[in-house]
Image (cartoon, rainbow, N blue to C red; front, side):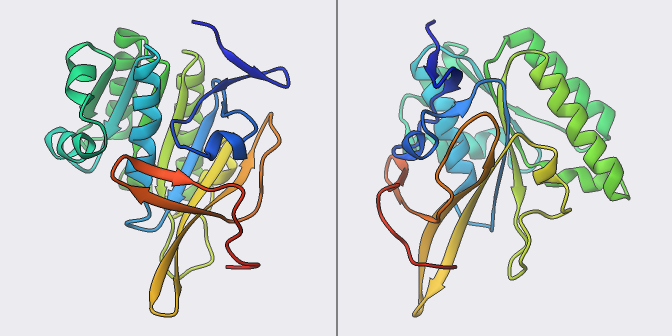
Length: 236
């Protein structure tokens, strides 16, 4: 399949309306994106849209869940894309539950499923569960880097979902996830006058220019929509 190339960098379109514009063409191919946000910010929806976009183009995608069951995720995803059943039946998307046994088991499941499927897109939900396997921050960072290397060696573009601590000025649970990734996208739910405003910010993205401002977003019946030309407010 012909790759989309912008400014000499091969891209993977995100499937999020408006986001490719903010990224000057999409995620750089074969990159690892750390997607962070507070609970309810839309991380799971964002990630599924990324896999669904690939499936529409005939690209295979893997969704690894360490939290919710496959059946629960299928029910959620069907709300946004009724074609999910078709993608699952045709082998374009596969949802895999990883037992929380140990890190080596997690690594083996990801490696073997990637090799068996030959996926071009991948999601790990969520990388925060590495805290169950390691007691120190440096071991967690080493594990994230190792998982990234395993996935990149198979020429796969991936999203690692993480948690943004609520009420704290931090992007991640451990403070190392954003440094081990090629790109960081943060989803926010900002309280303003007794209501919440949704926003997205591209914190970093290697190999491409991108918008750096807070970008308004909305979640409709078909998923997340980003409005790169709109202004939110000066600061969050």
